[in-house]
Amino acid sequence: MPSAGTWQRYASCEDGLRQGLLPMLRTWRDMGTQPYAVVLDMDDTVVRTNEETEREEPVPWLDALLDALNHDGRDENMSVVIVTARPLGQEQDTIEQFRAVTGWDIPIAQVLCREEGARDADELKDAAQFKYDGRCWADKVHAPVAATVGDQWWDVCCPTEEAENADSDLFDDDHTYVRTDRNLCTCVKLGTC
Ligand SMILES: [Mg+2]
Image (tube, rainbow, N blue to C red):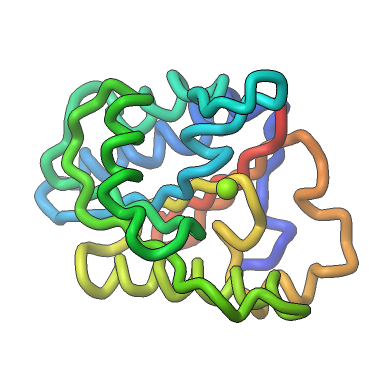
């Protein structure tokens, strides 16, 4: 498993998406016909809640995210899987909100929501496991995961990896981190804006 030191830090979400994610997805496209998947978190990755109006709105880096996912034109080989901690039953609503917010009619291969319960002292560990299991599911059922994008460490790190870094300040700032491993799987941990 790559060490935390292989993460590259970018000043903003836009920088990380345009300089880190976009070129890697272009590479996947240029490799040819093999299907691949991109796993997205939803809340604070695609939409966020406006604290003043308490209404949901697109994230400020949405254009950069869509430019990366689109990478110069729709790639039929790319599947999008959303893995979200929203409760079971919100799958269709999540797809409709994704389309409404992004204005993009890309097929969503699947939305994985989280079973409620088990939110106790081990909540963070539990969230990390849920997200990790979701990525494994996408990889197994849909296509090899080329990229995963989220705003929390559990969106992009393996549970054991984060456990090793739990005492560090890694990711705990407003920068964006991008890591690409030797299998060309790109992880983007968005900062906060
Ligand atoms: Mg999130």
